[in-house]
Image (cartoon, rainbow, N blue to C red; front, side, top):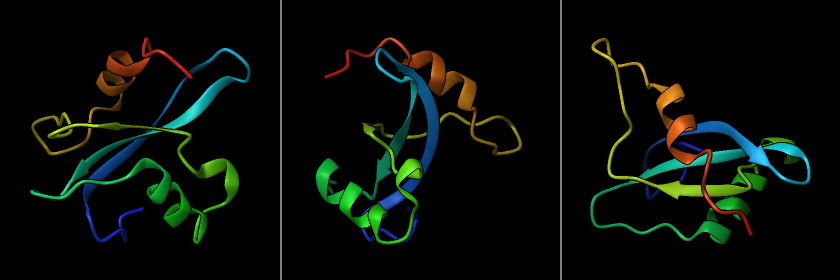
Length: 87
């Protein structure tokens, strides 16, 4: 995913899904001044990722939460996005 030209940083998390129980979601930070289209990003990921690894849902944020040593706090992302409405 990090090879995408408009992507600054990203993290993947698992979120609840009504049909499958869970699905892969991506939390994306675009480069300043850039916008990323969800469908285009998924097509880009298909070129190098297995189908089950491609994020089914994308969430766009300004920055990822990190601890003092710089590690992404995925538990905070899961808590933030677990209740998002699904299509």
